[in-house]
Structures are given as structure tokens and as C-alpha cells.
Length: 178
View 1 (tube, rainbow, N blue to C red):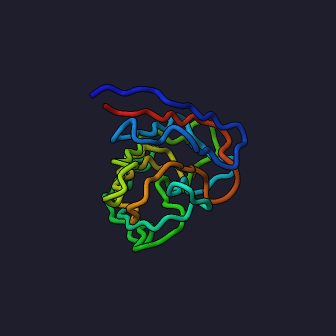
View 2 (view 1 turned 90 degrees about the vertical axis):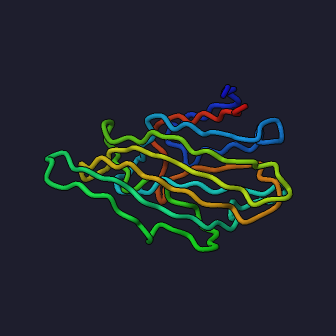
View 3 (view 1 turned 180 degrees about the vertical axis):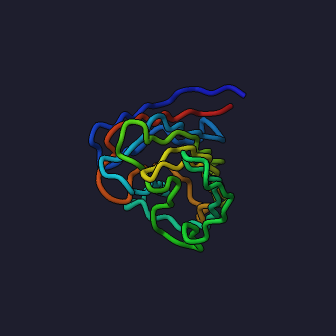
């Protein structure tokens, strides 16, 4: 499996980071790598949404599932939890992939979102993401989110943002996978 870097977006008090070109039929799989992402304001959710070709508004219909492993710094709490409150059942909201982001430099997020066959005009678009992050109340989280974007139109844009406030810092790299 070879990965080709297509684009890099770096946040500096950015309301969102979006890739509005480069997602096309060149690759059947695209990966978005998150490096040291954190919000300006603690307690925010890191999220994404997409646009079908020719559309705007980042509001495509998704069905998703969310579970996580967590452990706090003191070692007193650890769990593996299904988080149904962060699922979407044919929803059009931004999908949460990171919980309660912390604004301190040691409270950042890293991980990968994989988008499959975004240029297909026959099938819905599947995705999966694995995120690791330290959050604002001193927990380490490993989040697993998967689902599908319920459109047979090609997807050609993706946007990442926090539920409120700006992305203070961090980088997202978009790769084509062959």
C-alpha cells in the first residue's frame, strides 16, 4: 500500500480546516492524518462533514457508530464504552470523532480518518476513523467511529472543525492510497 501526500492544512486559530480539491477518482481510498490538533477552548468536540460534488453546506446524510476506550491519569478509571449519543441515524450534522478536547498544549488529538471510494456514483461512501487524544479532564481516549455517507453522488470536499470555537493549532494531511 503506497500513500501519496496530496495536501496539508495547518491550523492557526482556524474556524475549520477543509479540503475542497484533490478528492477525485485518482484514488479509491483517501486518508486524513491528524497531528497535534487542539481547540482554543477546552471541552469541544472535533468533528467532520462532507459535500457531494456540486453541493455546499457540508450536510450530507450519515449513519454512524461510535465507541471508545478511556483511562484517566490517576489510573482510577478505565472503560470501554459504546457512545450512542454520538451516533447519527441518517443525520446531517457534523460527525463527532474527538470528545472534550483540551486547550492545553499537552491535550491534543491524533489519528486517521479513512474514506473509501468517494468518487463512486454507484455506492454509498464508507468511512472509519481511529483517534487518540488527551482531553480536558485528564483522560486518554481512543475513539473508534465508522459509518457511511448515504449518497451515491461523488464526494469531493471534506471539512473538519470543533463544535464551538476555533482549531488553535494542528495539522491535517490528506493522502491518496494506492
